[in-house]
Length: 488
Image (cartoon, rainbow, N blue to C red):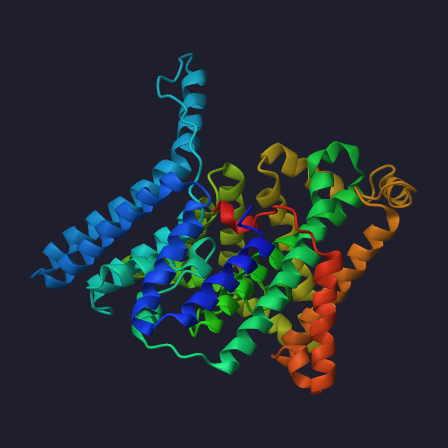
């Protein structure tokens, strides 16, 4: 399947070679055609849905700019938002809402007359919908001129490196880049390939290897002890981080080779000292989108509520964030939990600052990081299972070391001669070594604020690159494993 790391790499090489062979005036056409092919490979019929929303937003942007009076501009903006949110609501939330309606009908003793539809969610729908919405909103606010070149606007929505899972770009950042004349640049090539190499390593060596253990445990949680469930929950934190940030690195790198700069989407979020800090460093393009277009308007509208306006804005924003991630109550609950945590941190800022002054800095920082990571691991259980009852079972079992047989069962399972969470023994310990090694490397990058291999001699640098390539070849998983966030 095209949408795995190896397929994307082959696709990228072909497109990039053609890109630099063509004259500047023809390159946007190549990128648009490549993006259409990339999108159609998943389910070709859905390209017409995407083209529909692109056409609506392109026309709406021009009408918003040319209309006289705020009300006329607002009408065109509302038309654009209805088109985008309508498509998103139908494909992503129709069956979710219909299922809940059916539940209500059943409680009343009736049968729901609304049919269930077998709908396949278009790939990356939530991402390019939000990106398209930011365009018309920015044109309405007067921060962006309407794009008159239909092909360039379509490319802004469909640019293949970030089409499926972001980052969610703003028009002010991307549209000017599509109009620029791009020249081959050796520095861009090296920086881009480094990013792609690190991203592919995180995806196929760490995330996809870890996924084999996580999927085994989550496939039948009742067959494993609390210790193994806890280990699987911790490993999933590394899986989702390496999977999503790996895709972002690949996207940024592949775009950089061609001379395009995408926004940074991750800043080592697993080392955050608070949930608030986590959301400043995790999926930055979504966090800033929700902040600008949802949270701020709510807080401004409710400013008479003082600090409760902030709390209300946070809860609504995180509720929407959870729903954005998936059409299931587990995602909504996950979002609400994060909303409650961030709201608590906002309301308790003063006493926490006083505590920070009393405790030694290292102790306070370490405690905050551990508690934040524990919160992330627990809440990601809801993100992974898709079932409220299964999530609570895992939490109850995994975080109860006083339960009978907790450590004995974990010891027995981790010492099984044939399999350890779906692995032969040596493979399991190789995976754990890889996770620990990655965590150390990522921590060093976080502390140095620069990729480790940039700080050593050229010989060691190339040896490091070679080691990453060898790990990818011999330890990478090259099945048709999609990136986790492709489903959103």
